[in-house]
Length: 240
Image (tube, rainbow, N blue to C red; front, side, top):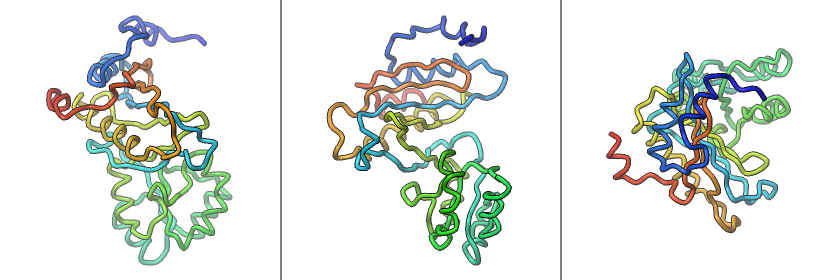
């Protein structure tokens, strides 16, 4: 695969084989982000789990303390008072049977998060083949099937993100923008790592955090030492 000059130049500016401390990695990723837009910074974590086993799937959502740097477009499948609550909270798209039909028949997918009330999940379930592959299917485990739609809309618009292991045990989570201060990126990074440690499946054996990589949208991946992946209060305070 041919690589652009900007990407090739970035590769030459750091040691690709070295394992960096989280603070160093965050600073490195910021320095390597040279696109003409504000690149998203993402953390990729390889976990020591077997996603083929139901008891080892790692999935959930968390609120990033420094936000994501972008406003999520939120669609809500709800009716009555719940729809009014979603509207008041700032949901971008709201509907019940009409929204289900719009997605199913017109392929409408102009949203980043889908939230549904439990009473509408029978209809929303028909959209599994459309929403599932795109990671948009509402699920109680991620807080996107709920009766408290107002709170869910507010949280997802303000910096709540979902995570889930892929087929080989990787998790990818956006933790902000390259324009963020290093301390803000690290706050979000620490929140992700702490969350993954908190939800470690009891059935997972051996080393849990196998690898950690930070990267920006157009930049190369910077390896983080997986044996020292967590950020201490002292390290975070030093970047503030």
